[in-house]
Length: 354
Image 1 (cartoon, rainbow, N blue to C red):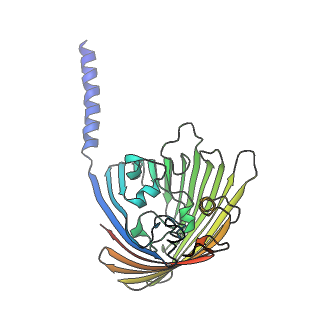
Image 2 (image 1 turned 120 degrees about the vertical axis):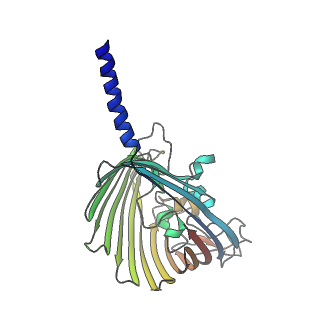
């Protein structure tokens, strides 16, 4: 009995010592946030045709002649040793459209995940996080154009699952398994595979990303998307970005079709307080397989040219923006209840982050 007592006491002491050593590890946490708002005016002002028609076919700016709150965000990151957790909350129409399959409080959860990094080269993540696919992101202050492109709007927004990131000098890769895209809950659904390969030049001025997402959606359609992002810093005042993507959709027992898109971003920063970005995008959905076809009722292709100025005052950025959308077919409305192939829009937006 005495030996058992001492053995138990020794085991408890070893366990407690290990616990206290781990509990005294230095922990760090950060609180960040952002808010954005905008005014949008489409020059066709098609209220006589249909008061609900805003001639907006991309995410987050579906309004006309109205001041709007985009999103207010708060993010908390905490790490202790090799483990960490992140809660990223968003409130407003932008957050609601991002989590369009969720309801009530779940719609406010932009991201929520746990991490474990067994080494400085490997990290595991489990939870919900923004997609790796594409050039543009949800948080407005991270984009130089305020309005979104078509590839972002009709591609995946986020993933819920488990992934592993590995980084070795200038090369990295990610592989993971997740629910069908944009679904926090997906009972009985088949899981998707996600992946990324990244490479950077030795000076960090050129970076490339090859992204993949594949699996079946909740309608049992096979989805495969390949995506390429390249960024290059030409000088301290000029940089360029490129995004190209193709997504194939194949219903069970039927032949598949695909949509694709390509965009170039030209960024000029003549001074620290002023910059310009020109986005040119071509989006081809002639086979009517993307969400765009559901909105306009037919397969078509669209060209988007967007010029945005960025005026910086500390962490505040003011973005006046002009945008031209031109389609192969007459998918836009005019004010005489007619249709037309092109439309133009002005946006005045502001973002702030801390």
